[in-house]
Each structure stands twice: as C-alpha cells, then as structure tokens.
Image 1 (cartoon, rainbow, N blue to C red):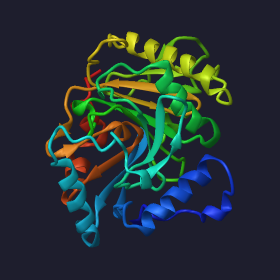
Image 2: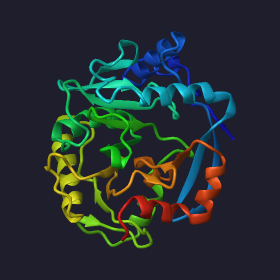
Image 3: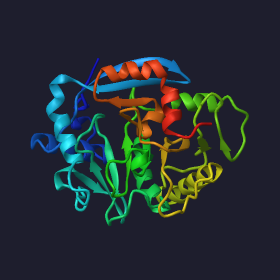
Amino acid sequence: MSSPASLAPSPAAHPSGLLADIDRTRAGALAQDILQPIHTEQAALEPVVLPFTVRWISSIERKHAAREQAAGRRDGNFNPFLPPEPELTVGPLGEAHLAVLNKFPVIDRHLLVITRAYEAQTAPLTAADFAALARVMGPLGGLGFYNGGATAGASQHHKHLQWIPAAAGEASLRAYADRLAQQPPHTGTRTLAGLPFRHAFVSLAAVDWTLPDEAGPRLHEAFAAACTALDLPPNADPMPPYNLLLDRDWLMVVPRRHEHWQDISVNALGFAGSLFVRRPAQIEQIRAVGPLALLAAVGEAA
C-alpha cells in the first residue's frame, strides 16, 4: 500500500492555530522544493502484543533517499538546527524552543521540537523541553518521542524532541494502553508482561495539557520516575541511551544498547509498532526473527 508523506487535509480545513501554522509552512516549503517527503510502501506484520507495520522506500523515491543519506553523511559538526531553515520553521514553542518541520518526512506533518540554543541530544531532558512538547500535544494530541543519542536512533546531535499526529496505521501507544487499562489501578511505574525488553510506563492522567507550563514539570516528573525504575539516571549528562514515547495518557521509557539489529536501524517509533527499512527483503528478516525479538536485541532483554 502506498503511503506518501504528502497526503494531508487542505490547510483551509484548519484556519487558525498550530495545525494551520504547520500546514501553511508545509505548503510553502513544498512549493519551494525545500520540504522533501519520502514516499514509502507499507506492509503489516502479524500482530504480537501490538500491531507492527514496516515501511520501505519505493523505487520511485530513490532520489529522496539519496538526498536524505547525503544529508546524514555531512561533516559531523554540521548542525541543521543552528539555525533551522526559515522555510521549515513553524514558530516558537515558548522562549527556548522552536517547532520545525522534518525536512525528509516519512509521516506527514512530522514536527521537530528543537532547542533554540545548542544542547546535545545526550543532555538530560528538562521541564522546559516537556513544556515545549506539551504546546504541541495539548492542542493536537498525537505521539511525542525522543531518541536519546545515536545508539537510540538519533540522526542529529542537537537536542530535538519529535511529534507525529495520530492516524490509523501510524505508530501509537494505543495497544499498550488497552492492556495497561486491564491492570488494577495503582500509582508509580508499570510494566507489561510479554514485552521482552526492559521498559517502564507512567500514567499521565494527572497532567493538564491545556496548561503547558504546568504540564512540563509534571511530565518531567513522570519521565524521572520511569528512568529511576530502569536504573537510568534522569539528570546524567550525558544520559545513557534510551527512547522516550508519550501520548496524552501514558509515558514510556526504553533503555537502549544498540542502534541496529543486523543492518536495520531502530528508533523510538519501533517501540510503538513502526519500523523502517531501505529494502523490501529486510521485511522478511523481521518476519523471520519477529519484531519483538528485534526490539529486545536493540533494547535490554527483560
């Protein structure tokens, strides 16, 4: 099934607000050939604990893949966020952060939440980082995520959280949430039986998403609790590698030990059921081993 990143409702459907700003910026960047969506084909795997999809770059999109790879091979000192391209910049998210479109999106409206001043991707997350993300997730929902360092799948060294909108077939914590809802209510961190990698969930039921400056410290507390449960020091600089995922109901942290399984790179979205490969043959590699075993290999075995 074709899954072009450029499919989206018309900006006219959202006359005001952050989503309208995203769509206006996207339309302008597309018109100038600055935003370069990567079109993919998509396959579903047999559901195990959560549904998995795998995307691969279709043959007609090789030029975009080549551009993306060329960007990744730039001098390691190159920083695309200092400053970000004006045509991709959506606007401020508080005093210390900006919303910037991902230049090479696989998923439509993929947004980066970057620090205005340089901070390393391995630096600890702060309440201000979470408040900036809350300014996106409060009105728009969706999935926030973070790749804590290169080992966790980060492709840029400048600190940036990421956001994708909620959509059918996209990465989601929904399957986890359904199983967590079946557990007896309790405070603190939770785990799910059947996941073969170390992880921790924290409920976000107490977060008021309409007040991002208050949500930021609450989200940071939830993050610190999950890290502590996993023996990750939440204020270490640099932080050990990990992935963070959150929606408006749950926050999840997963420690990482490898970026790749064989020649397949895995970032945070893998733990929300979305994997990306560069060749269709790699899908059969994933089918053979099973997606959960792949995640256990790049994470820490439970």
